[in-house]
Image (tube, rainbow, N blue to C red; front, side, top):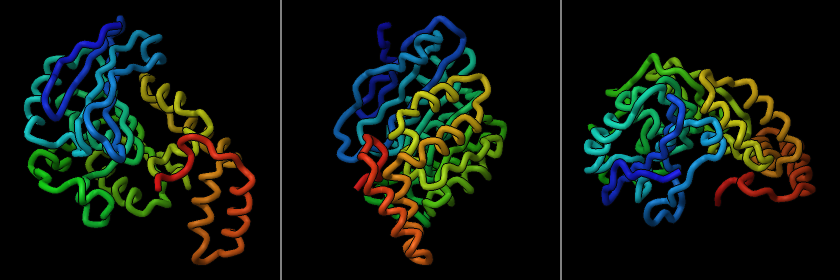
Length: 264
């Protein structure tokens, strides 16, 4: 499987691996602390086994794919998007999936803890990275796609992400909400710590993504998730100190699993 660079800019990059089926899955870089350059060209063996083409959209910086090269990238994506196109994105990558949904002609998207904008007035987490934000290029309201099917996965106990989810649902009402309580940001931390990321990929690649398998896997992973108990404890500190103490005690007895704990 030979990666084919279909857009090669200084700030944005798109890499295609062609498959044998008519289905294409598009992925987007997620926000990463200390990002310095493009991520390596990799692919999903799960998608490859099913014969899906894979199109990876990469950015050199945490800029939510919005910069001077965005219009040229859109032109390139319009040329290569073929067949049934589906997308998967986490956090910043979820924004990317929604931002480019129209030009890709997406039939379905699975987005996890996306932002409606990195400059949303209720969210101060990303403002230092969104200096010089181009609202005309980044506005999801101008690119709403009410008929887009799929899943919007989020943790309702992350206040900023809950408000992002509500705003996104107003623009993309075809996305079904999947609430993973105390999953963190992104909301699949508990699932990831239990080795359940393949399940999210499977639903993203399915012709009709299902919410219930993701909910069930999250529920099954909670008891063994140190991160889940710590997030529960943090929530309980204000009004339920006894619950918070018990949750911290449970967390202390559990091993640390890669990807399960919140970033610090």
